[in-house]
Amino acid sequence: MKETFKPHLYHGKHKNKNFFEGWYFKIVDKKNDYKLAIIPGISYGNNEDEHHSFIQILNGKESTFNYLSYDVNDFRYNNKRFRICINSNIFSLENISLSINSNDLNIHGNLILKNLVKWPGSIVNPGSMGFYNYLKFMECYSHVCALNGSIVGELNINGIDVNFTSGKVYIEKNWGKSFPKSWLWIQSNSFKSRKASITCSVGTIPFPIKDFTGFLIGLTLENEFYSFTTINHSKINIQNLGDDIALTVTKKNLKLTIKTYTKPKDFLVLKAPNQGSMTSTVKETINGQVYILLEDTKTNKKIFEDIGLSTGVEYGGNFSSLFK
Image (tube, rainbow, N blue to C red; front, side, top):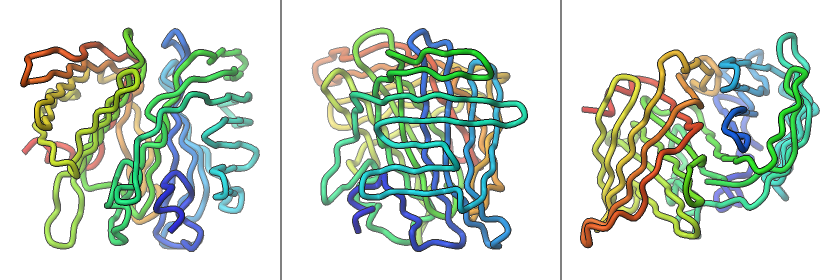
């Protein structure tokens, strides 16, 4: 039960088949020049010879992707205070330490993570997925570990020293058997004005009686947090604009508009889980932009309007079904 109330912890202690778990760390330097998505995780497929741990790395600066596979025994975890290790690479909510040596990718260094802004939770609704965490038949669970945060430190990336001090970090995770049948994801915490961040996930969720479209959207502005989710009865409308989307979501007197701006050439293909095996794919960029407008429809007041840089945009499965 400890993992239910602290979703950022590892959930696979008693799993050895048809299970995956992965953490997504997105780091961006102060100038929005260097940006990386680093995804450590573990995969237990149907057959034992498929079992492995991994680190996926999406390099937005160079538009490259690497999938680094490790022995399943190279994965270690500590659930007393969240910490996972894959080989000599360490990930926690306090720091990231990388020592990666592969044929075409070398990354070394240590980053300290500070001032993390977490998704508010409670016993009834632990984490960003809320009470869905209590349902044991879900194919995929998700949790936003940190909507925003700052970085101190540098990485040496293929011989180049990159200073990430005063940059931004975002952390989320997924676990279960498979990703949803279809989904889209948008995230940015690199806005020009105010301490703002946005994360948006929409997916077709398999359910015993009938599949449904679930979503969770979190917006932070300074010390204010706005959530628009399936659980809190928000209403969503999505438009497909080719490789981009525009959506509006409402809750009581609040209306949030989100629109992405991406280039087809910036999307790369990453690996995704299917019954625990990393045999599916997703399309993602971390070089997008996102327009955000938050309004109070009762007073006709514009609460926030800005464009976020270094935006993550991801599509998976038959995501066109989300627009029906």
